Length: 445
Ligand SMILES: Cc1cc2nc3c(=O)[nH]c(=O)nc-3n(C[C@H](O)[C@H](O)[C@H](O)COP(=O)(O)O)c2cc1C
Ligand code: SF4
Image (cartoon, protein in one colour):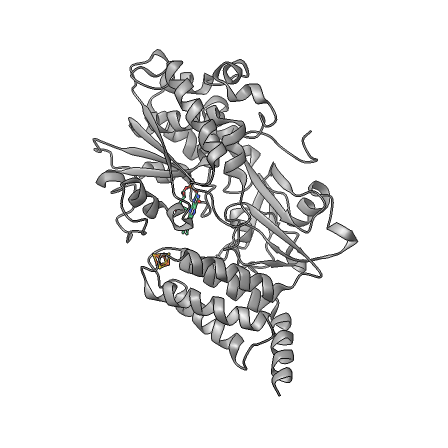
């Protein structure tokens, strides 16, 4: 049963075991969008995707149509890579999407490939997702047998192969250039950008890397039109958003919701409120690399522009003509990220949670660049001693200075992913860190 406020575009087949088979998927209207797309000009598909305001669901919210438009016009070989490496703590939507509706992803990949002039697409799936890998591989095999992949896709003159490739469980391989290196059989280290993958990606050829959820929205856009998809969203973001809610709520889960929903509505109306009758203290809005919100910030839509750090954006348009005031330019200094919402109640030990997050990034740093390799380790060790009541005078300032030294100074965004939440916790919940420190300094005296 859908929860209150759920709007199901890409999760509409959740719970329907039959829809995982080709016959069940086709019976529920599947592959109609692909057939329609094959009768369109690739440029017309690109126009619809641009019109739809679809933004990448992998974390950065980059406009998908714009990204596709970066493929050079004279490219002879292009690749599409679907990023299914989902590992950001708090995020578990792509796993469910692939498990329940594998053919929707294949259909989205096939339409995107056709629009991009690509004849070989790759699905890079996180190594630990053995169940989803089996489901996806079975669906790809069935799509070949059913004539929806291979030499003549759906009876057309278009040829497409899809290869399913398992990663080996490294978080860094979700970063798109690291993923491409891994796919090529190299060490999963991020590449310097530019050149961006759209210009020089897999095997040196123009490549588009898109998230699972992003690509699964494409069939709807082709079938219903980009305008309809844009209308469903708000401001510069089209469609719905899948939020994976974990932590101290009564009903955690994976929910597909309107983009305009606020964190407070999410907690109260969708997730049944905070557990044990407690109050909310902090919420991570989009995966552990996103700085937390405090209680006073819960009435802002969980949407890319509304939550982001761009001080130029003073308001967002919720519906045509309906504006949401961001408080005269006050921004929340966080992002909608990967949709992993982590709710913490009023008894949560935030310094301990922050230290755990730092440990994750220190462990997952690939070690290629110094600020991240050294800085994430320092943050993990210092935040742990603060959380354990062994902090030293000046530790908070030291962590701030290290985080500032990492942010913006690394090859990929993993460094930022550690620095941003550290700074967010220290800024918004400083009192808790100071209390821990005061107790440890008093204990040592
Ligand atoms: C450290 C790191 C890990 C990432 N992990 C993922 C991931 O697991 N899945 C994903 O789709 N994007 C991930 N990204 C973002 C990708 O680099 C890329 O922006 C995304 O796949 C693009 O797809 P989209 O435009 O559809 O969002 C990660 C980025 C970084 C820096
Ligand atoms: S920022 Fe960290 S993870 Fe990214 S390349 Fe540098 S060391 Fe590796």
